[in-house]
Image (tube, rainbow, N blue to C red; front, side, top):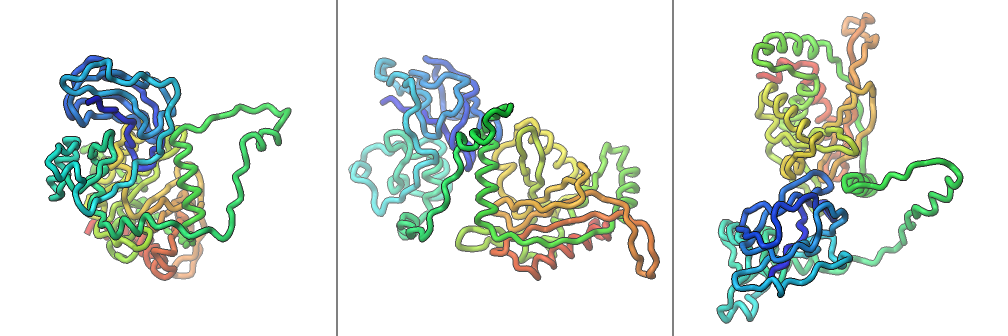
Length: 423
């Protein structure tokens, strides 16, 4: 039986992608785990693996094709004994396809076809995951071609029938209609006669626009601001770097900020949390995401267990993540997750700003430049100090005002007493 190979969803936000390059051709034999193609998502270029074995009967989407919707057929895989004549012809236009994977359903009882001993069609990866989770494949409905069970089906198979029914309940009717967005043609008319260049949105820009619009519309932001005195940290950093130079380690102020935030989340554990729709997930480890600007957008790679890592380890890991982010070589698990984020524009001369929370995080710290300013010392004398402004954007559903203030105070305490972070 011919199997359609579908455009995969290689990231949670992916709705369409570009089939950058085929690594197989028609007539090639493939096994599970073989690399079939390179696909450009909204975030990176990733390899697409085969989940079944067979022969590539027909390639339906040519390499270089952009805007290929998730779940659209891109090739046909023939099983043993199948004829290439049975493979469907390539379609000139993209068929209508859902922009997200089909919802996973768990049957209350095995399907009749499976109950009578018929073969259960499932990808090898789905079978391995099901075995690890102790799941019975006959109780899972597949969302792949011809009802084939795929990875997404078994990963979501812990959903109970009751929960699935609740999820499928119709949403309440809105009491007010949201205003329709202004059309591109309407905006263009405003600038009729003026010279401009139209820049189409790529996948990353579309994702950033959608997620940040959602964040500002749905997250009740509030903001807490503090200045931190950096003189002790700058002196300590200079001393450490002189001693670490032989090892090729050079710590940045940002490395200290990452460590300070990670330790603060441990000191104020109620603030180390994320919003999960109808509940709050309180995290144990400090997984800190750091915004990295790249051409056309940004990534937020995550430093997992940052509280348990040394400054030199955080520094080398951050440099590696930042380099691969700029090359768009990060894997999804490296920029997904975390409970807290840092956005530092100080190196660009920005003294203070408000950052937008990256859901489902509970907070994000906006860091400005260190600037020399006159301050009043503890003795009441005016002196010059290097001061840095920080703004903590907080999700009020997760963290209340007093708790957010406690978290920011712990961050400031760590930065103003940096040697204590090594204890």
